[in-house]
Amino acid sequence: MRSIESWGRYPQATPARVTHLVDRDAPLPDSDLPMLVFGNGRSYGDVCLNDGGHVLLGQGLDHLITFDPGTGILCAEAGVLLAEILEVVIPQGWFLPVTPGTGHVTLGGAVANDVHGKNHHRAGTFGCHVLRLGLMRSDREPLVCSPLENPEMFQATIGGLGLTGLIHWVEIQLAPIHASDIETTTQRFRNLDEFFEVSAALDTRHEFSVSWIDCLARGESAGRGVFMAGNFATSGSLNDRSRSPSLHVPFIPPISLANTLTIRVWNEIYWRRHPTSLAHSTQGYRSFFYPLDAISNWNRIYGRRGFQQYQCVIPEESAGAGLAALLQTVADHGRGSFLAVLKRFGHQASPGLLSFPMPGVTLALDFPQSTDVEQALFPELDAIVQDAGGRLYPAKDAHMAGRFFRRSYPAWERLEALRDPAFCSSFWKRVLP
Image 1 (cartoon, helix red, strand yellow):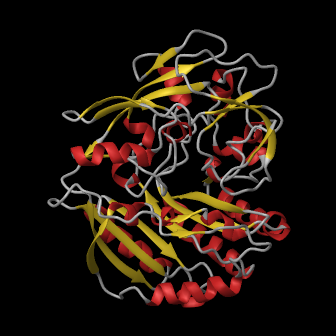
Image 2 (cartoon, one colour):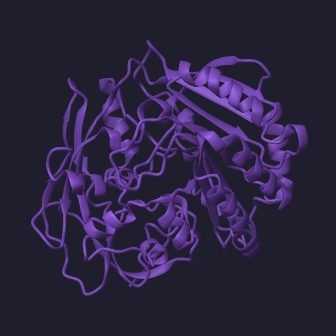
């Protein structure tokens, strides 16, 4: 048995039997315990955990299988990191069609959680760009799944939280680029109303957009923040001029370094250092897409108890009032967040059954783990999200009640029917009746 933990380090590390996967053609191991594949552990809550079960470590499946520089079609084993794919394809003029906020996610994890990125309003989720995948199950022969081959299993596996079996290879369509730099546009906004104005004006002109917000601001400044948008440069070098990680958190402090005082000071400095009118610059893709990857083990700053991320999406018709209520509640509790991200989702539907995005606005906040956060703050936030018709992101969740999950994701019953009977997770056991 070995202790396995998620990136949020909450719930605390759980014991599991471990098997290292090294051969994509090998059958699943015989096991008397429920199994689950663990990629690189970048899920924040318990969706990647299998307390007391059998964990299949997937990073050994880390080979590129085929890549056609002419078409941008790439096939790779599921344990390959997105950052490793970029090292190969950028010099050939290609980029990931969708990328989350870290390059340290495995290809299989990107599919299983149907990740989204700064270009959701243009490109949808990662699953929208998956052409085919290989699936190893305990109850039948290996499957090839695509929109035309085993389509029901294809839909269940995209965003299926790793429950339909072992994804052992994935084929995706990459996006063409002419240079690896991003031409960015930045502007701070004074409140939530101004965010919607800036977003409406700039989203349509940029492939990528995201906003940081000061979740401790109150009154007329409630929801103030910084809007950041960008497009790939149309000319320039395909060489990576970004720097490798330059900072490292060497140990876990006894208490969280992220507290109300440090966050309030940081928020004030960060907001004021950005321009009041549109400012343009050019930066490397790493600093634009993966700013936190420059700090290795940054999750340690939250101390021994870890942290939880609260990420929700509010439908368009109720986004303004819902987000205002969420931010007011967070400020009332005095629970600031270093990471406070606001982003508009587009209308492109994912092929996955349990995909998180919907047309609307998503808000993501990080909180040091505490009893007050889980028992006082989160129930209030959940009630606001439910009343607004929104939902939470399973890949980041460690607290959602089963009733809330099942109401938010009515296709859960179809996934349960297609779930590999030998696979389960701590999350699935928590949210099922």
